[in-house]
Length: 180
Image (cartoon, rainbow, N blue to C red; front, side):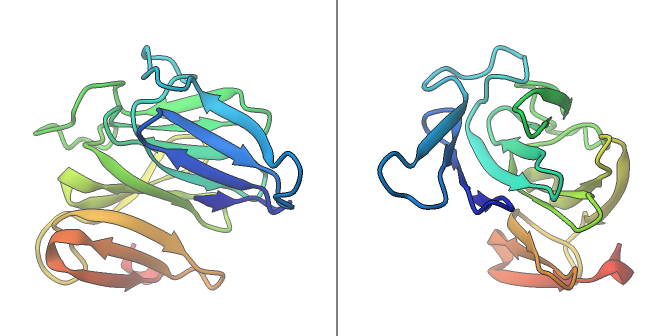
């Protein structure tokens, strides 16, 4: 889930292959919009999603969506237009751990300067991209401290600290910019 500056709520609906947007007030008609097509996984475009697993809203209103079974990250404008994607739609990264491949990404977060953090679950890392989709850096990628086995969730607090859940190691790790 994510909340925008107007306090609208966005929910990644994994099973129904969509992201739902709801009004902040949650009264009368709280539903505002659906991103994706309910029950229809992607067709390799940026307007269909295959098991969306995370959603984040940047300060400029743009939206980032990760897809577990779609193996990609999509950026949409505040108006819902697809701007770019990272990953190959429906193609697991498996042994291809290059910076433009994702393998069942679990979550996404955006920091105050617009960098996008993706919990790249089966590659055991967090990928960091700039707001224009260019690769910035990687956190993790191994098994020791500051590395992950299966990062599934992440968030960034107002001070810029990055919190990453590492499912298989049963821990939460906290990073700041010196770790990146």
